[in-house]
Image (cartoon, rainbow, N blue to C red; front, side, top):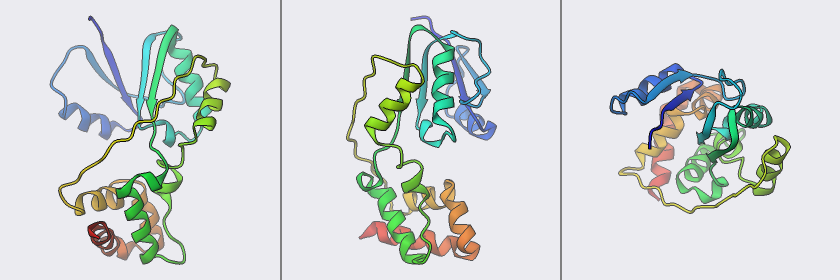
Length: 187
């Protein structure tokens, strides 16, 4: 199959990192782009794929309309989202541990954003409003593994916008909160 790929992200550093993880391939073009205002012509693509991104769109309808606009007739829009936080052991454990560190104002980024867009009826409705039809929505259960509880604790507490919520509550507690999340993951 002769295919070419335009790989996009809103943030150039993410693209730079991804490019280092991918063998050189002339079929791949790396480009900064906002999914809510794609810099591509109408009907330019056979497939639009968004892995773990739609739940971060400030306006999903805008992002969905853009995906629809750049797709050729009969094209496919594929994306994945995470289930509710209670179905993700790592994220749930980190969120619960941080609620112990900040009981009066627990950081809820993980529950609110990446794990907050899981309602199949809502997803279906938003896609239909954007003009998509013949929808197929599948739920897949997968098990994540980490070699150490420190890995998901550090990844979530220091490598996502959850860090901003922790630091907004007490910047001096970032390391202690991360360590507490790691110890909670051990239980």
